[in-house]
Amino acid sequence: MMKSSTVHPQKNIVRFAVVLTLALIIQLPVIAGAEELRVMTRNLYLGAEIQSLAAAGSYEEFLDGVEDALMQIAANNFSERAEALAAEIVEKKPHLVGLQEVYDFKLNGGNYPCPPFCDYLGELLLQIEAQGASYRPVATVKNFDITIPFFDGMIVSVLDRDVILVRDDVETADIDVSGFCPDRVSDDGNGCNYQLVASAEIPPPDESSDPLTIDFTRSFVAIDAWIDGFPVRVVNTHLEVRYPDPDNPFSPFIQAAQAQELTIFLQLFPNEEGGPTILLGDINSSPEDEPIRTQLPFGTIVPPYMQLVNAGYIDAWPLRPGKPKGFTCCFGEDLSEKADLYERIDIIFSSEKPNRVRANVVGNSPSDRTDSGLWPSDHAGVAGRLRFP
Image 1: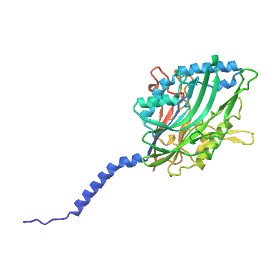
Image 2 (image 1 turned 120 degrees about the vertical axis):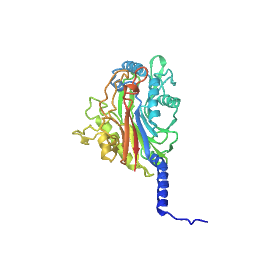
Image 3 (image 1 turned 45 degrees about the horizontal axis):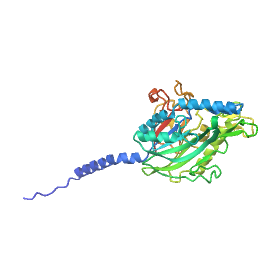
Image 4 (image 1 turned 180 degrees about the horizontal axis):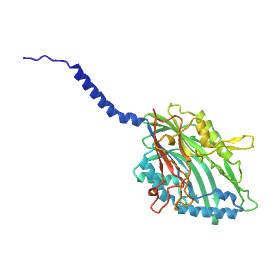
């Protein structure tokens, strides 16, 4: 005898709810991952303090200073530090990394011996690959770039760059900024040198020669990227120190003018894809910096951190759980020495407020030091995970 079928609507509703819940649980990691952005800002450090070279009273004194700097750079062995810096990137797995002080030192046109004559970008990429990760440079801007006739016919060349690295699984597109800075644009069109920079004149080698002018150029560089389809614009910068000339009380105007130029760019070049703009960098300005009131026509000098916050950019660090100080600056010139960090000048800014932030300072723990005891850089870095609505 055939039994009649009976419909149990409540049981069917329960089964449907269970199936729907399981489907959502399965999909949640994909949805969340599409909107979590991992970024890092990292100053690689030249390896010596060179601002004092500008005070040389003769060309011979200048060359002596260069020789001392090269010895310090060699002692702060970048080949060794690159391994530690790469380990930070491999551990944190950022989608994009803003690098500052990405130097290329050459002797007679070549990177040998290294140290001190290293290509910092090449060394870092080799170490990242050796540790099992894959990153590529997608935007580069040249800063400080000079050639120095050295002893016995040797030629020393020094190039500083700001670079954006991207993880190999991230799609990117160039940003043409040439309309903003047509006479100061980077070779790849993604960055601009700032209009106002600190400079110094070095005495000539002889009376028949002109002084050697050094422009301590600073810049910004930008790129568009998509993280699982989520659009983001990333800008990386390195601003001048607050007092490039300690004897000139108005020299902070250089840093402030660079920050103003940067904020104008950010306002004129928003992310057209609708996602946030993330600003990474060593801005050489902390939340504690106060405006400097002057009697000059431009009145008050507003520090970069305050300018960027006033322009609507949100500092990600205070949004993370807890209240750690997050200091990133600075270790001493000699990276083998113990030092205490005392201010937060390496910042992750966002044009939109993330609804969750996880951030860490990297390179500040004794366990981060190299086998010979070197800190990875004279700065610590900041790695952040930002989730947007």
